[in-house]
Image 1 (spheres, rainbow, N blue to C red):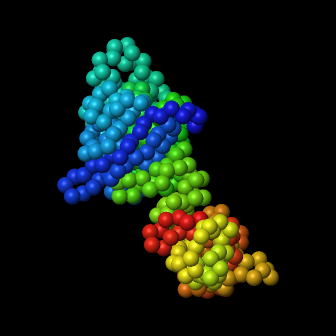
Image 2 (image 1 turned 180 degrees about the vertical axis):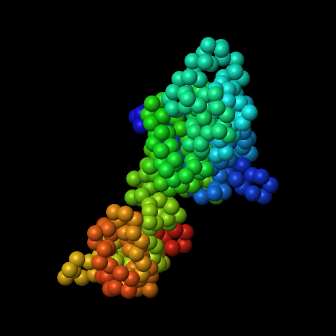
Image 3 (image 1 turned 45 degrees about the horizontal axis):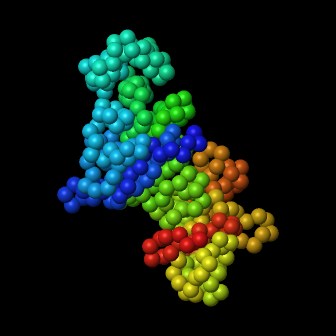
Amino acid sequence: MTGNDKLALRLSGISKAYGKVRALENLSFDVKEGRFFVLFGPSSVGKTTALRTIAGLVKPDSGSLHIDGRDMTDAPITGRGVSMVFQSFALYPHLTVYENFAYPLREEKVAREEIDKRVKETAAMLKLSHRLERKPNTLSGGEQQRVALGRSLIRQPKILLLDEPLTNLDAKLRHDMRAELKRLHRQFGMTIVYATPDELEALSMGEEIAVMRDGSVVQCGTPDELYESPADTYVGGKIGSPHMNILAAKTAKDGKSYDTPLGNLVPVRGPRKAQAGEAALIGIRPSDLRPAAKGEAGISAKIHLLEPLGDITIVSVDAGGETLRMVVPEAAALSMKPGDALPIVIDNKNIHIFRAADGMALS
């Protein structure tokens, strides 16, 4: 993070339709210079269309796009200072790694000596110096990904766009490339806009995350902000693993507590005004549930399923006709088995309240 408040990018009310399909709907967000900014959401929410709009590959039907303070809504692709890495890598199979790196510089009429210097510097930075004379089909998936990345970096763009670049890699390579991308971001300090449907990628890489749904941004914030204060049940369900437990509830007569299948719950951070009997949704993070200590009064529950994940175990319990998930240290879960009674305790400081009608946060 650079601490720079200058805007590198601003999208204001961008909409784009393909026939009856609305790819983007009043999409708006700002990206500060030097930030690692993530567009997060499942397939078909408009992430790729948003990146292609920034790159100039898609012309919006309405709205405006500003890059470095200049209106670039209708500007040509060249001159935007933007480079994009596609999910498919899009390498030239008949060219060597050296020629793949050199190609965009030759298109820009860069001098031969400068091309050679930048190709070798980029290859060294990406640990590809020993692969410069190879062709893409002789490289591993991780090496191909680094070539695609290098071909964009070599142009020294102001903004680097990455469209689900790690999707085609195995788990180990994805982990390694996440670390590599973060290192390159720190080294260059460039602005990166990264699209992914992967929650782990979004939370581990993004300094700021825009959660997308139906072609627009639902909520934008740091990973901590999105986790601690989700704007609605959609964000609450997308951010955090395991995902938030959601319970149907009604406001109790006192207007401060909630009648739920687990009994009456009193959130510390409840809405200021609530009508008795008003329908609501209660959100409880798995990390805010725990087994009751010996002798401690807890909510009656029975173990439904155990999912060991190394140093932690996800424990699903049946309580009040609901199945809830919580995270338990591995050592504490060793003696547990399905069917056992396991009274549970809820941390009421972190209960989230949502409006039943539209899922919007009330707390």
